[in-house]
Each structure stands twice: as C-alpha cells, then as structure tokens.
Length: 437
Ligand code: UDX
Image 1 (cartoon, rainbow, N blue to C red):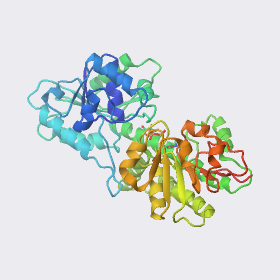
Image 2 (image 1 turned 90 degrees about the horizontal axis):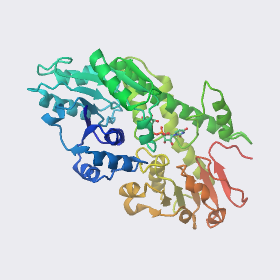
Image 3 (image 1 turned 180 degrees about the horizontal axis):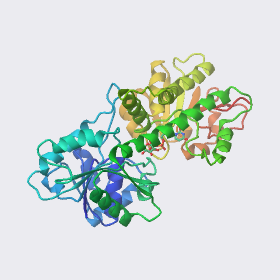
Image 4 (image 1 turned 135 degrees about the vertical axis):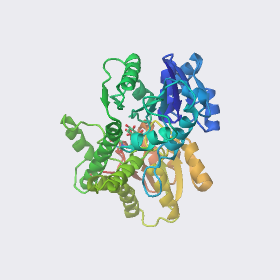
C-alpha cells in the first residue's frame, strides 16, 4: 500500500510520521518549502511531543517529502488530504486549500491507469466532499468509482498529544458511498490499529458533521463551565473546580473539558464553531446555542480585563507579568491564544508587559517584537510587577516559590487556571471561578 499525505500540519505530519514508522511507504507533500526542508532533516516545524522520534523512524524507513502534487502522486493507493481549512472574514469556511489540492489532483489524474482513493481528512462543513471536491475532480470527464474513489475521514487529534491520538484514536470514521473503497480504507486501518479502535462506516456528509459535532460539544462544555465559574466567583467560598469535579463523577457528563479558564483558543475550536454557525445559518437555522457558546468564549477576555481594572486603578505604565503564552500547555502554538489577545489589549492601555512561556516565546516575539519583554524563567516575571496573570496551565508554574511573588510591587495574582497554591496572606490571589473565602 502506497500512501500520499497532502498538507503537513499537525494532522498530516503526525500521520506521515506514524505510518512511516509502521513501515508503510509514505510521501508527504507540502507547498511550503521552508517547512519541507526542516521536515526532510527530521526537524518538525512545530513542537509536538514524540513527533521528532516518530519522524526519524519514518525517514529512516524511507518516507519522502515533496513540494508539489504530480503524476507520481496519483500512483499512490491512498491520498490523504490534510490541508488547513481556515475561516474567511465573514466567518465562513474558506476552502481555497482544499479546492487547490482537488484542482492539482484532477490535473494529474488524466491518462493514468491508477485509481487512487482520495481521503478528505481536513475539517470541512457537511457536503464539502460531495458538492465541492467531487465536482472539481469530475469537471473534465473523470468519474468517481471509475477513475478515483472519494472518502471522508475526519481526524480528532489534540495538539500536545497528537502522536498518542494518531496512534490510538478514540474512533475512526469512514464516510463514503463506494463500498469497495470504504472497505479498502477499513482494511488498511485494521492492519495498523488494534481491534479496540472502533471503526464506523457512514456517508461523507455525516462523517463531516460528526467532526463539527464533537468540537462544538467540547467547546460548549468549556463555555458552560466558564459561565458557572463567573457565577461561582460571586459566591463566598465556592470553587468551580470542586463543582466540576463532582459534576464529572456523573458518567452521563464525564469530567473532561470541564476546566474553567480564560476561554478556549487554538487552531480548531474558535474557527470550527464559527464555521458551523455560518453553515447552519446558510441552511436556514439560526443556532442560538452555538452562538452563545462562541460569545461566552469571546467574553472571557473582558472578564479578565475587569478583574485587572478592578484591582489596578491606573493601568498606564503598570507592569503586568504574563505566565503562559501558548493557547494551552505542552505546545508552542499561539494561534487564537487568549494570552496574546490580552497582551494586545493591555498594550493599548499602555501597560508594560513582561512575559514567560516555556515554549512559545519565539512564536510570540514574532508578533510583539520588542514591544514586550520576554523572560526565560517564570520567577523573573515577578520583580517589581503590579500584577501577574497566569493564562496557560504549565506544570512548572506550580513550582514557583512564594518568596518570588513577594518581589512584586504589591503582590497580586490573577490565576485564570487556578493552579497556584498561595498561602502567604501578603499576596492577593484571585482564582478565576473561586468565590472569596
Ligand atoms: C481540539 C479538539 O480537542 C480536537 O479533537 C480537534 O481535532 C482539534 O481541536 P486542540 O485545539 O489541540 O484540540 O486542544 P484542546 O485540548 O481541545 O483545547 C482547546 C482549548 O480549550 C485550549 O485553549 C484549552 O486550554 C481549552 N480547554 C480545554 C479549557 O479551557 N478547558 C478544558 O477543560 C479543556
């Protein structure tokens, strides 16, 4: 079985590295030459736990990387499409990368006896595979089932655990209409995964919808607990974490994705929620609940700003320490990071920012250049600061000794993830979602 993977982001590169490590013949394709050069040397262009070692195994086995789709690409049995699906300025899904890949595949698919199975793994709104990709592939006399097969196979991996999730997915969804090709992909997956991994067969559009259902439900859980956190904060002695812990004991609810915080960020939830809302509107249903989830999330930054302004009377020239820049722990990704958006707001108010993150400084410095100060040790954000805001729950922040916080001008900490344990009464500690003691 020969496999091509088009688009080497978190999804595509993790898959290429895993399949290559399993001794499957893989060709990874990405237009970005700079990225490709780094990958070819075995260096992932972003941080992801364990990815480097899997990539090395894959390269040692013979995984190759190319910068364009050619006739050779069509010779692969399986062609996974894992390109990005951003949203445009109207918050609608932007399918330009998917369309461009479909165009290139179609251009190269004529005059060949190969009949590849093309698998859309990118997150796309329901109907995209059938109503957008298929017509492009068929526009010049090619036909599904005759010249190619077309499946939808969404991916559920999380950043930070992308390799684990690729190796052990909670479910594998294969959407399509041609049973021969569905079974071909099913057999492929049965070979690389254990029997424990559930494989579900469905049609293309249901497969596409399942992915949005998962992401929007998880986002709903987060906005739900963030709303409760705001209420908890107003009630003496109530802690949202205890409420969430006991809620999670109910097996109908489960404890996952009930950690209150500054709001969800990253490359998926914010854009997928908006894409689903726009899609829903376009098919004639105004999705009030999803809109509330999205608005609740956007409002979190205002809740944090209110806490800051309530506790610091003059923001101009106030020195604010930021703990955590990545949108979550164990990644260097700052896309849609609340931390970055908060820094932008604080800079507008003329605050001075001193920030730490174990992995995301390089990415963040490309945005702010020398407008903010970065430090390589978390303790260093303390000296002479007026307020520290913890936004990313990196474990190492729990190791900061209290004496460091006493070096602040007037110790004040806003902990949006409630991971610090502060005992010293000289330090004013505000945990988001923790009612006053
Ligand atoms: C998400 C989905 O989990 C994954 O299935 C999908 O394929 C891509 O989108 P990812 O964005 O990598 O993955 O991270 P995730 O762990 O889901 O976190 C998203 C955001 O929600 C982060 O900002 C995180 O801090 C926040 N979050 C998560 C919370 O605030 N509370 C929680 O309980 C869980």
